Image (cartoon, rainbow, N blue to C red; front, side, top):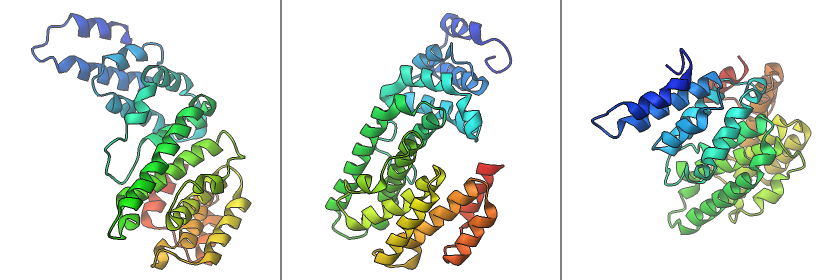
Length: 278
C-alpha cells in the first residue's frame, strides 16, 4: 500500500486490525518505513519508525533506499528522509554496530550518506563519538591480543575500514580534516599505517589526490610492517588511490596508476567501481 498508493491510511489499518501475534504490527511498520524511504516521503516516516521494534533494522532498510540512489546528486534528494531518521532514531546509530563481529560496519557508511546530502554539520558530533569509540575498540582488541594475529583478522580490519569511512564522512564536510591527527589516536603503529593507507582514498575522493599520493609515497618509503606485500600499507594506499580515481570516473588513470605501482585492482574492487559509476 505504501508503495502503490497513499500511505496515510496504513497506520490506521495497523492500529485497528486485530492480530493474533503481537509481533506482526512492528513488522508492518517496518514495511511501511521501507516504502516511505523508497518513495522519499519524509513526513509520515517518524510514525512508521516509532512503530518498529528493531530500530537497527529500520535504519538499515531506510539507508538501503538511499544507497540505491548511488550518486551524490540523488543522495541529496534524500535530505528530508535523513533528517527524519536523525530526529527519530538518532541515538540508535551509536548502538547499530554493537556486538557486530563481522567484516563490515554499517554506521560509518550511513554517516557518509548524511555528508553527501549536505547534512554533515548535523552529524558532526555523532561522527566524532563514533570515531572515538571505534578507535578505542581497535586499541583494546590489539592490546588484548596474545597471538599477534588480531591485526590480520576480519574484526580489527573491519573497524579500521569503518574508521577510514568516518574520516571520509568528515572530509566531505571539512576538507581540512587531517588523517595524521586521526591516526595518532591509534596506539599500534602497524594499525596506524593501515588506517592511513585507507585514508588515502578519502583524500582523493574529496579532491586532494596530491595529498593522497604524498601519503602513499610516505607509507611506501617506510616499508611493510605487515609481512606480505599484498597487505603492506604502501601497497594498500596505491590500491586505494586507484580505486578513488575510478570512482570519480577516470578509469584510464585508475588502471595506469594500478599498473605503475603494481597494485592491481581486485575483482571485488572492480564490482564496487561498476556499481559506483554506472
